[in-house]
Image (tube, rainbow, N blue to C red; front, top):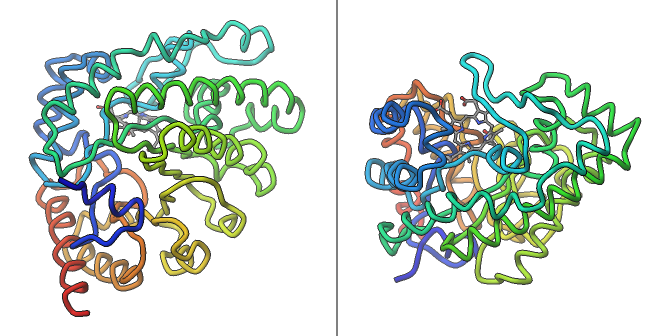
Length: 346
Ligand code: CP3
């Protein structure tokens, strides 16, 4: 049985536009909160393959999305490189130890991709239970985005420490990014070997860089990951998603099958640039999920623009914790229903 999500990644015709949501395994689901309560905390949950499988599959069962995304975090990999991680209430992720010198980079564990085997165990368990027509998306952070946390220690507004490196010590930063890239290629390869049907690279903070620096310090490394993966796994779609880079898109290329579009970038603008060279994934503003009529309006607008073109429905960033499940379900159902109707009108 074919998977409609995978078909859409490769630009094949599908009966409707497949849909999933970033952060779909998360706190807006009471079923997720129940597992998290049992685990005690978020990181413990990510290290327990049985729980990983359970919460990854929840959105498939509850919302009938076309793809499941592995439940984990982009920061598990740097944690396994030897940087202890904790999630602080009201702050988010915090690394106590950060990268500020060549010695710090040398001390990073090049076997992180092996130590993180709980992720691969989770992938195997998910695949045992995932319906055949649904796809499993594995993922990693981009080398640049994980480096921002490794250098800053936590989420940042100014990125002063890492941007200081961009301009004052670029060779050292390239060394860190090359290390992250190599680990990420191994990490995603092992996720694919364990059964991931597609992989996505999250570059949430690409937009913190000016144009030339974005290509030099982020996109080029993402391209290298895509190139190496496609060489080994031509049948596995690779999704690239950099946030906040709409104005840089005319120069973005690479061996991706799918490009994620954030909600600041109008879909018709992105389509004008990328044409049908890639499948575009996105891009409803996640706060529209607070209102069904606002959701309906955006679904129709996006579907009309993308009608006849390569598209996967998603949000333009992650779903927020206080969105009613009913509204998330409405988005998923309506995106399928409306895109199906458009195809039938042809
Ligand atoms: O999309 C999914 O459902 C899959 C799982 C997933 C999570 N994080 C689970 C998570 C994915 C793909 C991520 C990616 C991630 N993590 C990114 C890139 C995408 C983006 O959102 O820009 C980034 C920057 C992170 C780092 C991170 N993890 C932050 C900043 C936070 C705290 C902020 C928050 O939303 O609470 C996390 C925690 C996190 N990762 C949660 C989940 C479900 C919430 C943990 C909880 O309290 O249960």
